[in-house]
Image (cartoon, rainbow, N blue to C red; front, side, top):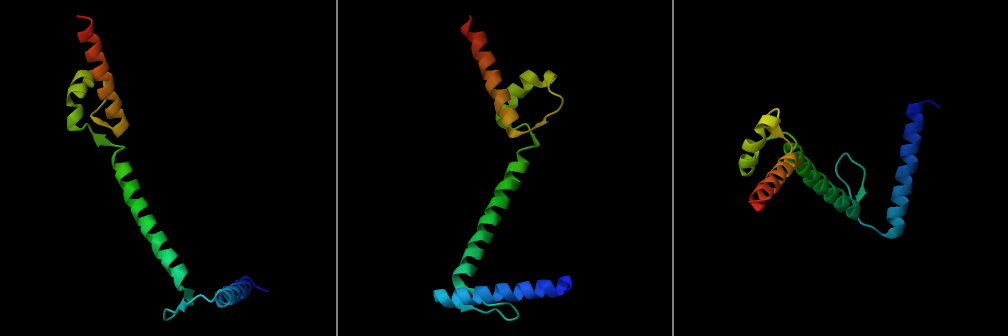
Length: 114
């Protein structure tokens, strides 16, 4: 049996099992023209999953934007202090946070010894 026939046979078996399970559980199904019937609960789960994927994609995009950012305004003092030691003004968000923390620690250390 060639692969195409095997795939068709497997699809038919799976469809039969899905229809049998749906009928056994008494789930309502909805048919979309040209597509296989699907349980309404399954369709709801798929829509929920799509919404989750969309929100995660947005979050990932925002995180990637933080990887290569020009120094933020709130790091200006620290950037000016360390700029001779930095190659350029592009860095990731945590780098800028640590730069400001180190700058503040050095500034406190210098003022406390007076």
